[in-house]
Length: 124
Image (cartoon, rainbow, N blue to C red):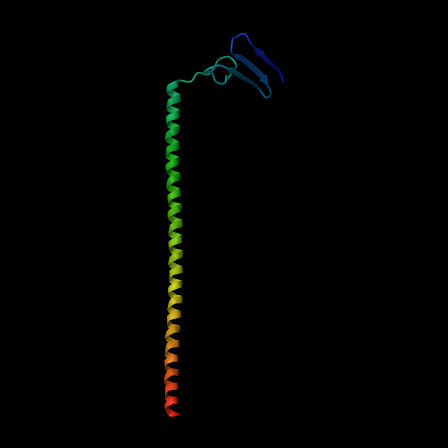
């Protein structure tokens, strides 16, 4: 790996090394990567602002899409819970009906037995 550092400019260095091709780095206040090692890339501030605004707009749209998906999932979960409760309520009502029917049967049998006992007591 080859490398060289030039300290000729105060507070700024040029670093150049090679591994697959050459990578140039200029450490300056506003300069970005150098493409060919000779000219720093200066981006137009208006272009940067436009890109940032577009990015914010894209992120806001994505956030809204995710919020809609979340609400759909929550509604779906709520609907599933309601259905489960309705089934549980239906099962509970069915069990209650069975218990009441059984209670009526016991009362009827009890009344019949009481009547039989009264008849037997009268006979004795």
